[in-house]
Length: 173
Image (cartoon, rainbow, N blue to C red):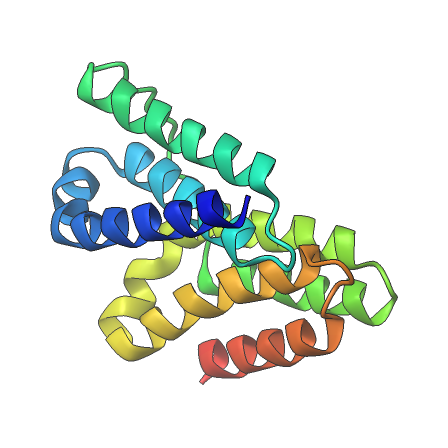
């Protein structure tokens, strides 16, 4: 229902407020867990922002986020080796591929590329954050917005493509 969705949005905002205060602790302790949490947070945000919001996917993404954090708290950490092959250039290629898929009329495949970008972003975000904290924040917001636009019904492909172009231009600068 609309009420449940607004409650979910409120809970998400509360969580984000706490997360930003504590994320450095988890990042320092476990880059793998940090990346997993960031990816799952992005998914929650994407599903909440989609038009219409997909309540089932919001709940599923929140449950996966809670499980990841609970596993971390319980010491069940699965350290996956950070992919050292990830670079700014490699994630830019993912954005360019997503944009090409949009122009080919394939928004769901473009959304899959954005999910890949979101999964790899924690491996390169530090480079961007050091270079420009404002750009880092902008990219974090844009990647969620683009993904939401692509899974909206109907997909907001023009808006998504414009945001991707802005992301590419900013990251290449």
